[in-house]
Image (cartoon, rainbow, N blue to C red; front, side):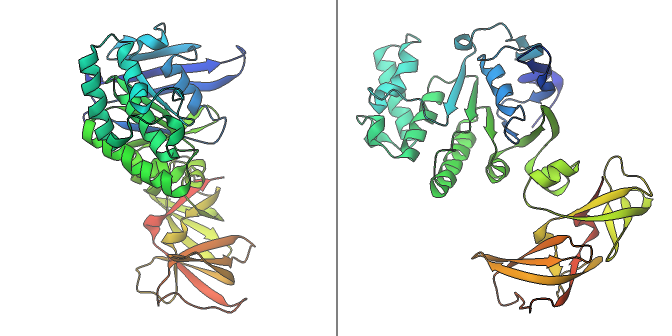
Length: 363
């Protein structure tokens, strides 16, 4: 995907938002989005992600900065003139209309002919695999079917951009996963641009081209899912994305991108992060699936001595709980197979890891 500024489709330029003219809920948001990208805004409640979406939709005003589509500012453009489709968590379908009438509505307000509307509605019902449900009302559909209708209605007038605000939040786990697949399939098939808001890390990782992680109105990191997960830029991102262990220590040496960290249970060789200095106290991040219990055939550079506490059966994997000498709890995830070890409570074990899977962050 090209990222030259001349080809930028959507641009946020130092966008800020305040509701009381004193406190900023969005603190200088910058982002360039290319046409066809799937961008997710991810973060805890109150972090500013939904406010950014509402400013883009035109439902909230921009306090300062600029939002532009294809090089034209839309700050003063009315919401209904922005050519943006929206999908909400509560579907926002008209209950008194049939599915077909719901899909036809955005076309009729745009003065399309009846013949063209009928053809387009049939096309999009087929696209979301609901051709047999056109005469039903929303109340006669399941949650997943209603969300597919909402998605089709957002796409049917072929908008410049589609915004999705926690669209799968009301669905159960199985339906969520099914709809994640459906949205991803349609995005790849049609190629529309998406700005998607969620607080669900798994959803963001599995669907997005890039993810912007928000905290307190500031984007902490914006990167593709694998980079975000494997190389978080700070402890907040490491802790918020997925599951993590943190081991306290002190940096004794830095050589290029590698640091030596002294802990209560020995030295860890680790990747560095911005702001890390020799002599500083730090936290070493190691994900549970990147730790291995000795003996193992996995390569390793580091070993931590820990005491076994308990293990929990989760089905496809087993969670082992250990405790380090300083009292820090540490989790190891092991696939549920014949190699999964057994321990007695209080037994000592060696937990192994690779340098490339450890990152030290300054405290």
